[in-house]
Length: 323
Image 1 (cartoon, rainbow, N blue to C red):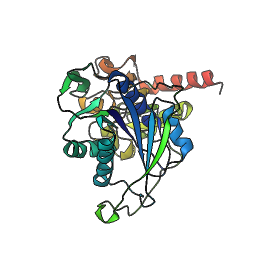
Image 2 (image 1 turned 90 degrees about the horizontal axis):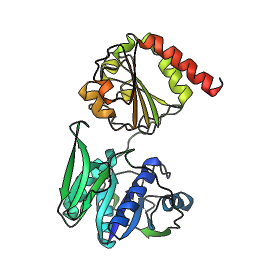
Image 3 (image 1 turned 60 degrees about the vertical axis):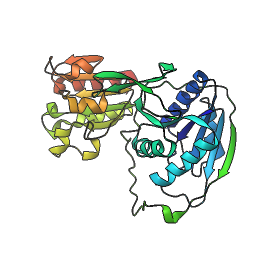
Image 4 (image 1 turned 90 degrees about the vertical axis):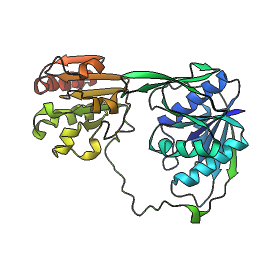
């Protein structure tokens, strides 16, 4: 028996998300009195794989094939399912990002496994196997019982603390079959964004809404983000108006993010927006309306005009950083 953790890599590198998964999987394995096995697919150097061991993985499997050059959900599903059977895994852990959401339903069919999607805590019980997850855009929670022999869990980003260990994981390399003729995904063009922190990777996000009144008032938001090493974001009405690019739109119909710190400036906090940011560890809201829904979700709030509050906030950060 084991807990199999699929860790995605980006150009041969792991991100915080990967280490969070391993920390979660290792703790879950302790609860089940079994071992945690991290599975990496693709070419990743040993020095990078060793990092997974620092977060509790007992063993690391590096599944490689020189022809793997594109993510294909059907092909990856077959690979993960094969290793789950070889490792006699009773739980498979993935991230609740786009990759995990593409893989989990397919794996469920392959392994005849029940799914707990978007879990944010360790199981409340292992018998019956009961997991905790947020529902209704984070306004409620559910205790979900999974009765199948094999369970698939997708972990909500930034929901589990990283736990470093002194564990020295054993790394093994496994050659895998990769029949390119069965791969349905074709990458025609790759455009990489540079000089800007990606929303999905950012620990801090500074976001603005219609309360900023015009795109000409966006300067302080960008400045605050640069000072904090943060990404910039916006609500849907802002991107629809063309004030900010659509790739900055967060919410139910935009990007779902879970940073450590989220600034909501001039954002009322409609349900659709909160659905995309409610998993943030801390939300700071600035709004003129003291009854705005965003304040019910925020840990810290300032009732005031953003055009007056933001410059003072920027100056305070500069002073703190000695700039």
